Length: 422
Image (cartoon, rainbow, N blue to C red):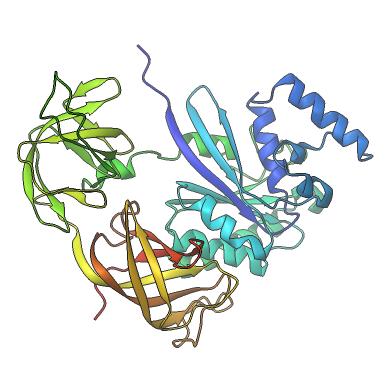
């Protein structure tokens, strides 16, 4: 049997009119992922708007407001595949007021494609999007210098943008950057190598997407299993059945593992792992399972199972980084909810510790408040303990959401720091 194809989750980002939606449409077309009726509908829409050449951006700009304005507002998820890999792509908006959507799209991405218009070079929104990718520690970043056809495929223009982007990425701590000169409109260096860039020796955009490592990070991390539900069906066949249901966030869980439930602290041994397809001896990150234990310890929703030798920190205070997503500012003293995995607790933001300046790419002195789309540090006191990892160690259990107590709206995306608040 042929081995299963790997899955890569990626996102696109860039300033307005840099060509993100056109790039996504080009990828869908060149990988033959567009149905005939979809292509016909896009052709009709293009002609209705007075266009001559097929407007591939219409394949992803699905909202009526987006089509009327010619911009992307929401995060558009698309699925495509090549003979070697499957892809889930989040096409994120470019406007600054939709940075929160970019955070949503990048939160699960393993690779980010940041677009830059070759005529304009890096702009403030490029820096902001790169800062978001660095903030969320997206493992791989690709710079696509788009619209090279409008600068006559000039190599010095490309090299200048490549050098500037690398400098910004380096200052933000982004280690892995690949730069490709492309024309999304005409397909240059998207799926096939362009004869108009003989000076470029690197991979096409699609070649890099197929080659970049994917899907291995979560399996290599310490095992974390947030309990979502305790199952006790009490059937005649299994009168004493008690299973802990949820999805393995990271690592590998196997029958026979000694585990501890945190923050309560009870320990036991895994005696069984049930799945919709039957019992298994081993399960990995991303699988939804029901875990059976030797002992009937006090474990409920919100607890985290971990191996005894790989325990997370149990804390009542957090030093964290926040990407503020709400219209009203965040100020010290704010009372909020912290949602971490399957557990939600009340909390108070006791202090702000700094703010990222997107121009200098350095943190400022503690600000009076964090405004919409700003990134900054905060100290948070929790009403109940949480079992957490630093985001740098485990991306899956080091992140959390800040939620409004009054209406349940999401206020911020948060990343746990490398050590506890002092």
